[in-house]
Image (tube, rainbow, N blue to C red; front, side):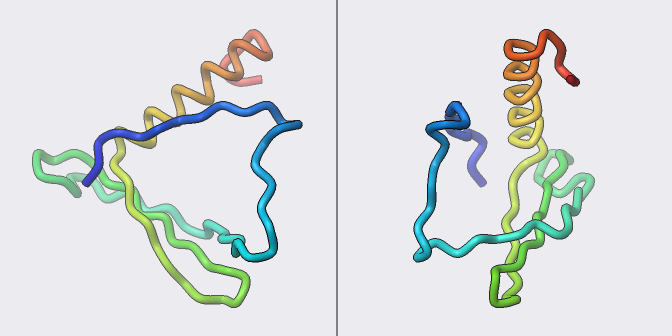
Length: 85
């Protein structure tokens, strides 16, 4: 399972715009599996649905979730002067 994640930062006015050919997915449940990885580290499963009601999931490591959280905290700190505006 990948341990690296490319994180890109975009301003709201240049954020990605998707065509009708790209289906929107909605996350409806996140499951944290304690000791889900070799070595006892957690995994996170995201259960998602598409616009047709088909269900899928994707899995990432707890470490990648933490990386995303820290990136968001950094953006909030830079733009709002606090990690939790």
